[in-house]
Length: 203
Image 1 (spheres, rainbow, N blue to C red):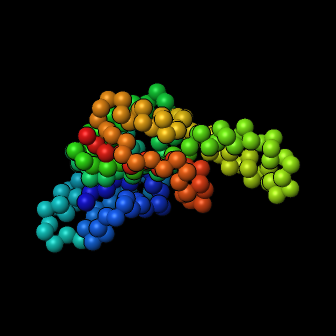
Image 2 (image 1 turned 30 degrees about the vertical axis):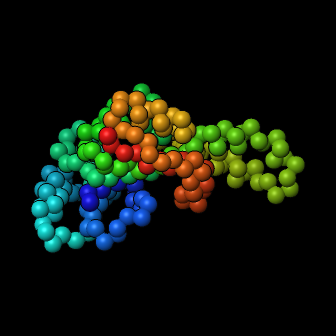
Image 3 (image 1 turned 180 degrees about the vertical axis):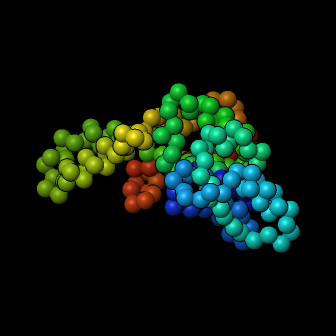
């Protein structure tokens, strides 16, 4: 199994359902935060050799490159793509192009695993603020930090698109390249349960 982990940082791809963990997998982590000087052509060569090896074992490698550039130029086709807490950083003007690029590096039945802040939850948190005031255990400071971080993030790397279960389905299925197979609107990730996780299949 060939996996592309987009902007995952230190997060490893999560399991999907009851998959066979004994199947060898090559995980390519692409993130501009990595120190590595590994080149894309080296990665492609290594992966192509790995795919041909009947005795291959699981392995991984890191690549420091902009994900748009990588997907525009690679000839690789991935069985799975993981996108954890990155899609919301893609500008709403680039979302459809980004999803198109995902379609070019996947094949029929490939799965895309997406985790984004669920803006339905975040909106409800704002609407419920008045009722929180009467709760002695309510910590406005931590509430505000979580809410502001997940809505806006930091100025150098802002959140630039809004995601809800309905928006996931609309945008991913818009061009008939993908089908949203599963959605968990209250997925707990990195200690927070305000996330939306969707498993999306390439058609």
